[in-house]
Image 1 (tube, rainbow, N blue to C red):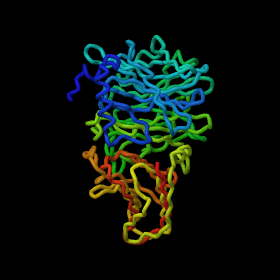
Image 2: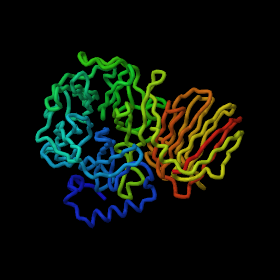
Image 3: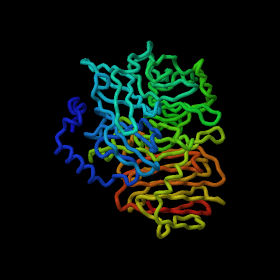
Length: 489
């Protein structure tokens, strides 16, 4: 289908019920529908938004174009959960129905104030010449679940010296003031983040750019998120326009963080270390965090990337969200671990201890399409070792460690139907350790791999055939001891 502006900017309430039912049937017949990840009923899902714990539940919203696997008129779709594992669909939360968000409700964040959940988002508009005019808008949700928009934007103009790429506000409270970081593009086509403040969420003052050491680092920074963790300040953002650098920056766009001293809100100075990619896989972008009632800093990302085609497109849908991860800092590095609640998904369990030497080994109950797998490799003498999963007659996905290169390697060359081939089929990162623990969450069309308790993470979509269910453990040029457990999901 050729998507015209008329198709891309149709409102959901103008679409015939038969057309929607036909699209739902098409989506539901797709063999790559996920079993336990958040995914759209139809159409395209992208950035997670408004992630908050409010009124006894976790609330999460995501960007949604319901009519196909493309970026059209965006809604905020609402899901909620009491345990971060089982998510209930709650329908459209924010529609594009005012002069300030006529062409889509773009990304933003949530914050609790006066017993309400305030949702701060970018209203996307286009004029007759198709020139973009962004507005920073607010809607709020009460304890009954009703959502009401404020009549006018709270930030109506792009600050002087910047282009109309001005979006994705992330709000927090500090010292009895509200602050927001917003992604923006300078007139010289470089990306950065600006800072605003407000005493009441309604009246906002422009403070200026966050002062970082990254003055020429891509052409746009999307989905910024600032928070403190321990005695550290953390700035998350998703830069567009970086060139590949060895094993780094291999995807079309990146998502990562800078770790440093807490942001000086008076001078806007952020003293930080290098930009570090949050995830070394093929499909991870636009992460957002929240602080929950237990004091945990939680993160969810979009398991996908803009401007790429995916195999599910032909079935009328695209993308999903990652599992929830808890963040911590260890050895001056941000560590991501799957939240403890994910153990609720575990069903039948099987464990094995063995030695693998110059061979591939399979074990009877180690197979499937949806499972959690923990594998510890220790007393290692092999040059290469790892796991092949979703193995079929012609298919497999490989996570391995190369002791000679001291690199972790994810290989989806033979994972099934290909996607984004121009960006390669292998991802690597340097990693040094005496023992390697691989923690996999495999779903029908994805994998999330946590290395040594979240020191590194690889997140990827994969699109194998339904009968590719095998799991092999292997070692080359030597031996390794293995202790592994699988839980079916």
